[in-house]
Length: 147
Length: 142
Image 1 (cartoon, rainbow over the protein chains, first blue to last red):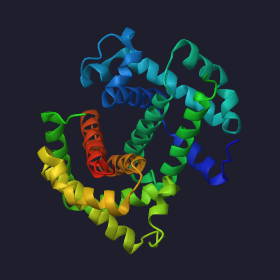
Image 2: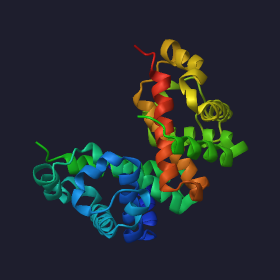
Image 3: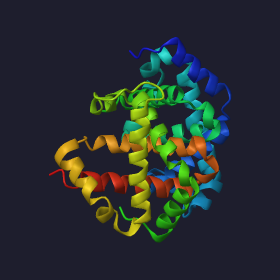
Image 4: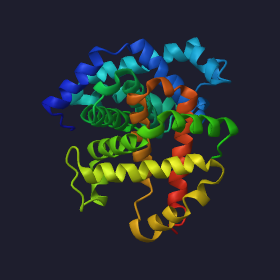
C-alpha cells in the first residue's frame, strides 16, 4: 500500500481543488494524442484526428478527456485504496480495451505538464514530485489486474 | 524517430525564446529531477544537492548549454554532441532510462516558466528533440 505524507495529501488536494476537470482532461488527452500519435490507435471511432487542431477541437476527445480525469478525482478521494478503486477499470482496460499500461504512464506525464502550465510557479518541485508519484501510482493500479 | 522540418523550426524558436534563461531552466530541471526521481541522485554522490546548490546550478548550466548546442546544430545532433556522447559511454554511463526523466522535468520547467510557449505542437517537437538528444548520448553505450 502506498504511503502519503500529510504534505503530499495537501499538495494533491490544493491543486485538485483548482483544476477544471473538463478543461484539463480535454487538454491532457489531446496532448497525448498529439505528442504520442501512436496512442491514436485506441480511438479509431473518434473521427477526425488528422491534425493537432482537429484533435483539440474534437468533441469526442474533449468528452473522453473529461471522463478520464474525473476518474482521477475518484482516486484522490481514495488515496489509501487505489488498487480497489481501479480494480474494475483495470479489468476493463485489459480485457476489453486491450490498452498497454505504458499508455497510462504516458498520460500521467502529460497530465503533469498540463498542470505545470496551468499553475506555473505554484507547481513547485515538491508539487511536481507529489503529482508524478500520484500519476505513477494510478498507472500502477490501472495495470494491477492485467493478466 | 525523425525530426521534421516543422519540429526543427519549433525547437529552434523555443530555444531562441528561452534565450539567456537557458541556464536557469537547466538548473530548475535538475532540481525537479532530483526531487521527483530520487534515484537520479545516485549519479551525484559528490554533489551538494540541497536547495540553491551552486554545484546544481553549475551543472544545470552545462546541461542547458548542451541542449542549446544541439538545437543550434539540429541537423546533426550526433555530430554536435559527439564528445558528450563519448563521455557518457566511457565515463559517466548514466542508465538510458534517466534521460527520459530529465526530459520530462525540462518540459515541466518550460511549462511552468513559459506556458504560452508550450503549445501542443511545440510540446511534441520538444519531446522528440529531447528523445533525440538522449538517444545520441547513449548511442555509443554498446
